Length: 190
Image 1 (cartoon, rainbow, N blue to C red):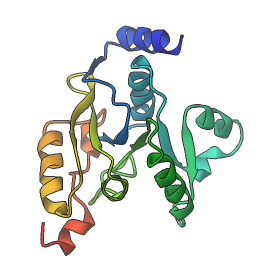
Image 2: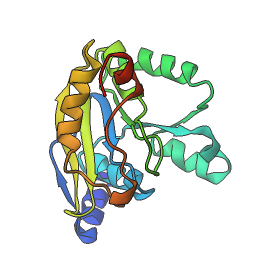
Image 3: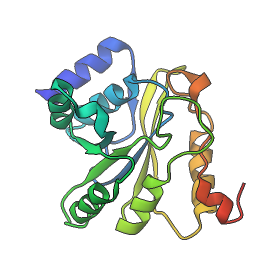
């Protein structure tokens, strides 16, 4: 039922889903420029029969919204101390069962200077593929692009990420953050 409903909503909204819904990996959702990004990614995942895990700041889990977010695959994260949730996710990811975790790499819906590196660190540590997912408002498309395995060369990995997201604008293009990590500075990148 959820799959059919998601496909109907996507069709009625005029958005086109592209690519195949993955079953395992760390999914990078970008550009993250609107609250609708979460809804759009859920619809696309559901249309492919997948319910992903999504890390969401714990403050949003207060009241009835917490129940709803949990039912949608949301996991509350204390951003000051995310270690326990990340350790539990790593155990789950290594279980051999299908596992898909969505992370908004930009970390906010506002324009920023850097992406959060959690997707790269979790993908590398758990040896999970990193799936590049996107939302592009101007073309009204959203979906999945290439998959990559994180290596020890963060700059080379992020060059691939930048190439894919080069023409992806999000729902509010003016809020888009260029894909780059602080870790690239330490590795000699820009």
